[in-house]
Image 1: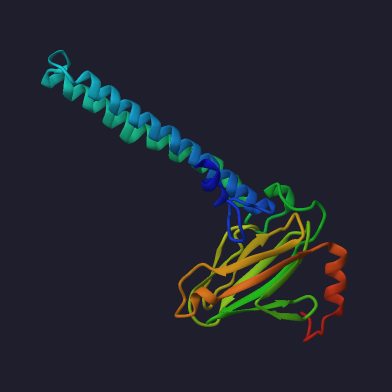
Image 2 (image 1 turned 60 degrees about the vertical axis):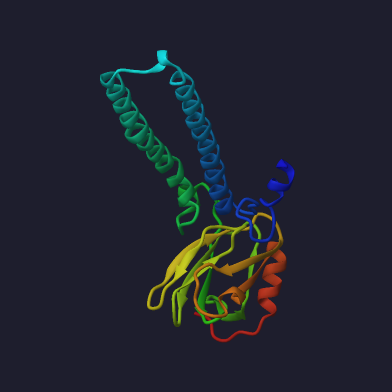
Length: 235
């Protein structure tokens, strides 16, 4: 049964099948959260079984005062101390992973190629399509993002109408596309291939069809492709 369940962790839209540092950081946090959740669940089940066993006979009947003290210990330990420690650990462990998603210098986030300037791509969402522009070259695309392998790409996301959400699960986290505002998320592909991008915020009747093909190409092939594209006015 385990093999069929794990097969769901792969696929075009699985964040557990990462192909870049941003997505890998998210997947690592997820696996740690799953492991801790399993341990906590097993601990709760074990405590329940012990409690059932101890209270199954006359000798297991506790006095009212003893029951009150025992209950207070469980409330403080299981209701305050344990959740506080879990939240603090998640914050300390998850915050560095979040740095991979931000347009920070590579030395800060621990990801990206050292000394390589990020590529900027402007993405405008509208019902129900993605308009993309490479501002340094003036190249424009529709529902297709091309990026070089091994180079960080800063995606500047906005919207022309309602709130959308830009997400390429195998390459990084999601970011909302909000009218009148520009949000930035950093992606990077470590391997060439075609990945699926999806609007992750319900935005109308055709929301499910608002998809994007993300094509990661070797750096030299990307440069050749970019040079061959028609320009519409660079920044």
